[in-house]
Amino acid sequence: MEEQKLKIIYQDENLLVIDKLPGLVVFSEKPIEEKTIIDLLLNQFPYLKTVGQSPRYGIVHRLDKETSGILLVAKNEKCLAFLQKQFKDREVVKKYTALSGGNFQRKQGTIETLIGRSSKNRLMQGVYFPHQPKSEGKRVAITEYKVLSKFFSIEKGGKERYYTLTEVLIKTGRKHQIRVHFRHLGYPIAGDKLYAFKNQACPEGLKRQFLHSGFLKIKLLSGEDQEFNSTLPEDLDNVLKKLNEEIS
Image (tube, rainbow, N blue to C red; front, side):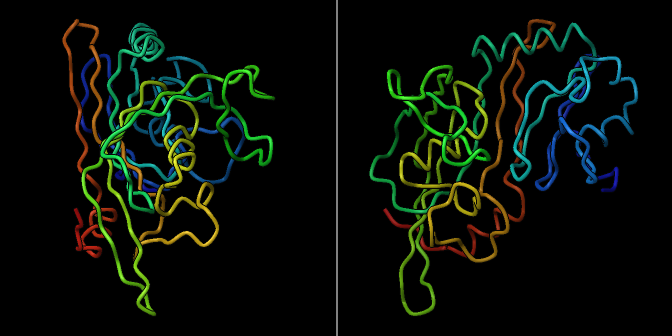
């Protein structure tokens, strides 16, 4: 992966904010052949090896491989601890744009469950509820969403497929949280190969899960509130343009 693909949104003496491309692992606990975000970062900012611990070094949080958007990287230990505490205390505002298969019946809602490794597939996370069998040790996950737009497309043979575009705000940062919660609702993220239902429709031209981290608000070490924005990438924007049939 070429170094110039590391797009920087913002940086100061303490913080680096990058606009992550899809298809890149942020960091890996085990050796892999493909380049990761941390590899690209260390090539450009070698001093990050002095921040945090391997393999994540100064990376404050994580995005899935096929998810694009805003990623925070601390340039020093003080900033890393400061930002990690904000995440732990649920003080960070994180908003995503997601396209799901199906026609949402509610305009907005909150999903609150426990999330932990699935008992049926170790690659997946699953939804659990308190006092349910195997719920011990699972962690609380809270996701809020509101519907932005609804679309449909006509497949070959005349079959209609519906899609819903949502803005998603996560109050917690569990692994695969949005993907797990939307599957639980019955509307998996479009293009999500792991959490899709069997024979789920996928919009024309979509090559990955339609999930983008487009807004993040934190407090800087200076005490100032700072907002970061990332526009919807071209590949996802083109998918919406091809649908081009909005419904009420």
